[in-house]
Amino acid sequence: MEISELDLPAGVLTRPLADGAALAEELAGRVAEVLRQAIDSDGRASLLVSGGRSPVPFFEALSARELDWSRVQVGLVDERWVAPDQDGSNEALVRRHLLRGPAAAARFFGLYQPAASLEEAARLAGRSLAELKRPVDAVVLGMGEDGHTASLFPGSPNLAQALAGTGAEPCMAMHAPVAPHPRISLTWPLLARARLRCLAIQGPAKLETLRQALRADPLRMPIRAFLGDGLEIYWSP
Image 1 (spheres, rainbow, N blue to C red):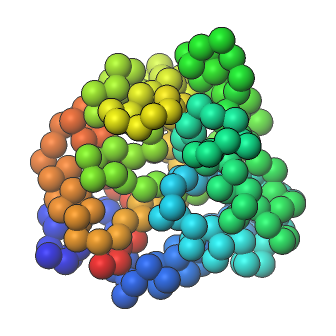
Image 2: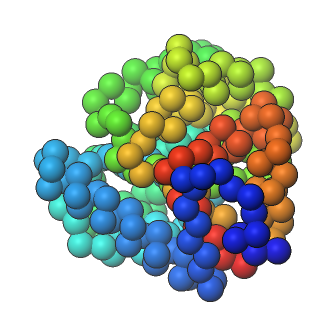
Image 3: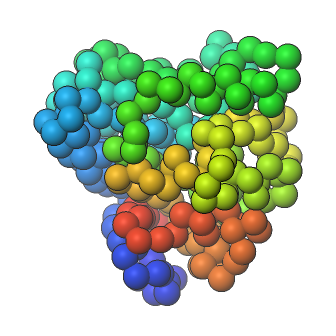
């Protein structure tokens, strides 16, 4: 199956690439272009990225782009509730692979907050984003084979509230079905209103997940809530 065979909603753009390296370069170029335009027009730019192993080539490609990084705000779409010096931290991943060289001048907004409970940590994380430029200029999402994106997992108790069009806090406590760490995730209103919304996926299994999500309820496959006008999907086999 090819991505061109999917019955995607009108306004969703697809960018099929030859392989993961080509995807990383193409996506980095597009994001850098949008950030540069935002700096030129507004004096600053904001970017939210996903964690995990898959985005690492994109991070490294983007870090090499010529930008006035001192005017760029970088944050995460989600985070495990672990300190940045512990295994599994998305913040540590971003600092290691994206915020290096000239890109180290960017201002980073982390989501991890020490607190008595995950819910309190999520509230504190939301407050820490008060100075994040909105609408966010660029968001890069990933997708799991269960249809989750960010840490918006099927079956998580707060999922319906996190996907609500209005009234959702910027960050909410989330629980992955099998992963060992509880999560903090940005919610749909903040992510879906970004000026550039990208979904980066690789492999036939992810393409099949996307096909299923097109017919699914967002509470069962949360990525469905993001499959709308203006989304750009970057895919490689």
